[in-house]
Image (cartoon, rainbow, N blue to C red):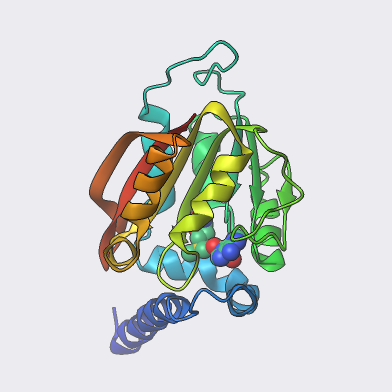
Length: 229
Ligand SMILES: C[S@@+](CC[C@H](N)C(=O)[O-])C[C@H]1O[C@@H](n2cnc3c(N)ncnc32)[C@H](O)[C@@H]1O
């Protein structure tokens, strides 16, 4: 490998790292976030791949391995269960879930351009852009999904921990809500007190969690699975 190749690779890696870091400075403002991802959509997959982003693959394996306790009306072992990917981005989670055999995956995101990238994967049944999960999303009805999943969204500068309540709202009783929380996000937000409050209010029970699982080169993430009451 000659020197110029090495230099250009190093520059690419630096800019991928910077793009991810800059996304963490968006202060949770949905309009800032939307504009940022509208511009980043085309380069996103390459940038996160340069930083060895394994969250989508890992959360899909985690989801697949969760105890699927069935209720009278829910058969969570059925690969045809309805899954909603919340903050689906370019569709990396949808693709990973499809590889594991899940057949019905819908997705939404704040950014229309990220959703366009997700469309091109053909992993999703339906996709909706301009959806802000910090508010009620009118496109999705209460208790309509067997499972909701979100990777890379509970991260610095993006959504507050209370955004999980919108995932709970659209998930059927007995269904699963599965999220990643990047370690630095978990350490600097009240995610823990939010989920404990939701447990006290009997809205969810914590089924399982993994601390410091693989996520991205720079740091790990925690993975959480809740059952909706
Ligand atoms: C780091 S990307 C993760 C995308 C995808 N889940 C993945 O793992 O590759 C974060 C995504 O969250 C979306 N997002 C951020 N805030 C959001 C909000 N309030 N409502 C819906 N989506 C949001 C962004 O538009 C972006 O696509």
